[in-house]
Image (cartoon, rainbow, N blue to C red):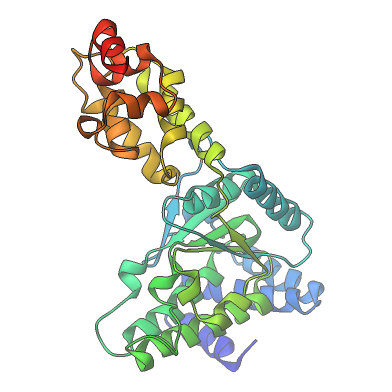
Length: 348
C-alpha cells in the first residue's frame, strides 16, 4: 500500500465520491490480504459492507478502457490436442490457486488465440473483460502512458477479482520491443509502464487472471515475455488438424444451403493436395465464401472455387494433372464440369 491510497481515501471522502471511495478501500483490503494480514483485510471489507456502500458484482462494472465480453454462447473450439492440453493446464493451475495467473498466447493470425481466451474464461466460470486499445493509444505525447496507468487502476478496482479474466488482445499494439521500434521514447515509456503495472498486479491482485495475445511475439519486448507465467504457442497445427477443422466448418456451413450437394470426400481430397492450408480463421472464411458465392444451379461449383482458392486455377490444369493428384474420373467430372466419356477419351 502507498501513501497515495490514503490520500485517495481522504479525497474521495471529501468529494463524497462513494464509488471511488469503495474501490480504494477494496484495493487496500486486497493489499493486506496479499501480504498475509487476512484479519485486517476482512475488517476493512466489513466496514465497507456496514457503511451500506453498494459492492457491485463484476458484471456491473463499466469502464472507459475495459469492455465486457459475453462468453455464454461460444462456438466449439477446434484446436490441436497439444494446444488443448495446454489450455487444460491453465484451468488446472488457476483452479488450484498456485500463483500462476498470467498467460501469453502467441501465434499467427487466425490460429484461435482470442477464441481460446474466451473459452478459458467460460471454463473458469469467470467474467471476461478485454482492454480497448482504441481508447488507450493517444496521439498526444505522454497520454498513452497515462491511459495505461489509469487502465491498470481500473483493473485493480474491478470487484471480485477472483471471478475475472482480463484479455489484452494483440498486446503488441502498445508493447513492441523498446530497442527496435522507431518511436523509442514514447513506446518505450508505454512498455515500461505495462511492465511496472504487471508487476504491481502480481503483488496486489493475485486472484485476477491475465491473458494477452500477440501475432508478433518476436517483436515483443523480451522483458514483457518474462512477466507471464506461461507462453502458449498456437502455431502447432498439422495438415491433418486443419483438414479435420475444415470438414467441421464445411458441415456446419453447407447445411444452410439446401440446393448444394454435400461431398465431404472430394473436399478432403482437395484439401489434401493443397500445398498448404491457412489457419482456422482464414480457412473458415475461404469455405464460407466459396459456398456462399457459388452458382447454385451448379451443384459442385463450390468445390471448384475451393480448389481454385487453395490449390490452383482449374482452367490452367489439364486432366492428366488432376488424375496424377489422385482424383477419380467421376471427381474430375465434378471439378471440370465435363462428361465422363470426354474425360476418359482425353486421359486415354
